[in-house]
Image (cartoon, rainbow, N blue to C red; front, top):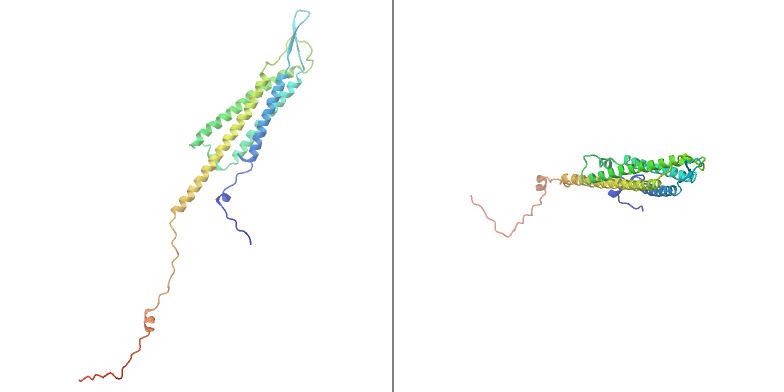
Length: 261
């Protein structure tokens, strides 16, 4: 005998997409983003530790000349990897968020409209703060890495030959770029958490609004009366003709009365 399964309200409600905010795909992307940011930070520290240094020499003619301590290939490779890695992180993270928000239901998109008040106002300011801070830290980190790339790539050839002018990076430039890269991924994670929280609140409010509408429709409709059943009415003449009369009993011994006219 087949089993009958009850259909609940949760079965009829739209399910959350597998690529939306708060899904497993989003959690995996955020974890990979943070791990990639940590990797970029480590690369920046390696580039800082192996950056080229300058040694000043005095020539026979009395002029000061300088020479590099290395070719700069290692810090150049590490800085280039961190530069490209951070750019890929930002593209993937913000591209995924843009895709997830654009595919969200209209109720979630209405949460970000200017006239939306209540808890949306504070979340809007939080999202704006995380968004601006993320791009500012990303821009500063990329600029610092670009400066390191330009300096370290200037003496790849004949780096051991003395020269009158030597360009070197100041101490802490590449490590600061790593700090900004790490801050960028954490701020991006904060932006993702804020957006997912806003979507959860909008879905909860949409569910409550739908339940209130259903309840108002249910209580506003008049109660249904039970169906009337008609009983066939009997014919009174037919019923009167069919009433049995009691039999008339005549006593023969009773004296008869004679009427004298």
